[in-house]
Image (cartoon, rainbow, N blue to C red):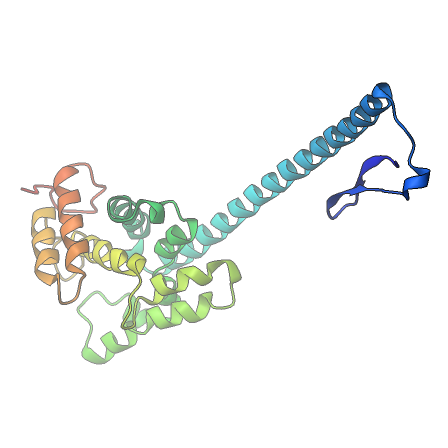
Length: 251
């Protein structure tokens, strides 16, 4: 019998058993069998450590790639914040609200990096909105508002060519008959942060007032189950949210 040995290559590892015809089969004594098995075990051990080192290197490379992705997303988000004064800190607050709400509604969603990318980039389309509309200190006219409402579509188009952000596009666009759960979560937290932030033409609502408005919008503009879950979350975390302005007197 020929030796039982692993066949190694850079791409994969396979085990091959060579079986000559019966006349040429050697008779191995106990020591011979033991030596064959020990040689085979040593080869397998060597291959195991080699493959383990390769896996660790791959894991390290993957981690670096994910960090690079996240740095890219934060840079894109910074571009939006630099253009729109009202967006500054809004992105990080809305991200924190959304992750907390997702942990209550669907915990596995909160651990999804792409889900977080979508929240940080939900306003990326605003870079395509003219300054006189984006930075207008007074309420927008109907025509200006129609232009402003195009930013989700612009955002989706901007992210389209970026392969690792494909699953984030529905959160950014946030439209359609079948709105994904992530987008429905974000609709609630985005509305909440907008209500509790000061604007040149209105004061910020308190958390209590904002939650009341969100519950009132449940079933029409917002998912009622998500709105209820967020209201409960606000009651639990009263005083602990990074609110832009306004009080945190949720009853």
